[in-house]
Length: 372
Picture 1 (cartoon, one colour):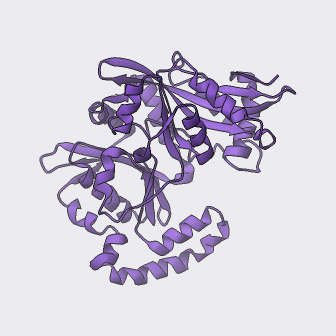
Picture 2 (tube, rainbow, N blue to C red):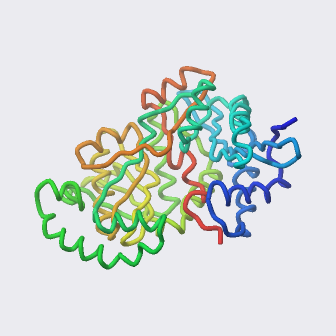
Picture 3 (cartoon, helix red, strand yellow):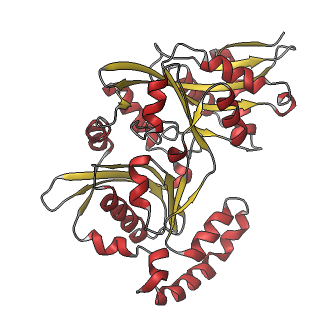
């Protein structure tokens, strides 16, 4: 009979191989550092005393044929402490995908002791499994947002991800964007491409770089106003911020605060990028009523750094401010939530829960690092 059991250290070489083949889609041998990182992420948990453990599916022949990776996070709902479990990776070997292995893994995970469960990377198939098991899709948390600065360079940067030879067209893309730049000075074209109106508002705010510790100190201020929010301890948060800074595939890390003329910090952001490529936004924080100004400062900062464009994940508190800024929205993966307490789910459906980015999955090195 197939078996589902907690992940063990002896399973890590097999799980790492599955990561390399199924999640990372690499044909190269498993990097030597990957099994050790998976142990740190999934066994030496961010908060191992609470929530569901990571789980493996063992087939009839004794092979590990599926895996669900789980990290735990203490949260708070008003005055109540919560144990949250975040489902970061659900993988099943190709020859096992028709035997409900994935559904069994997800059902076992959701039956764990945690108060609330999340994922921000649910595919259409996985999201359907969550809803079948009484989970809920959160549309306002489930959109990727994209802002294009240099359209030709953006197209080449996107093509390089699937066709490396496309990089040879980079000089041509630069020439095309330089020509298009002559038309960016005004009008609708400048609102869609380049920093546009964001550059105009930049002068009213001060953008300053900050280190990981400085950004960490801001998180409680910007997240505690939500009814459901994270409650990290210092050790766990330092570990999250350390991993969140290591994404070699995405480029350099930029951490910045945004301050008003009075000196009061109204927001902050973290993104990764390199000149000519598409930047990845990990987190945007903003005080109520200040989201538009913070987004403008992020857009202008990334455009000035020479990026072709940026993309990130929406949150309800930011979504309204993004309207009118010529930002493109697409749905690639969905954010899903499950709880036996319907009130917790309602808080997220109303946009009064903080999730995605640092409070989610994308802070880990699984997303954007090389392990070489």
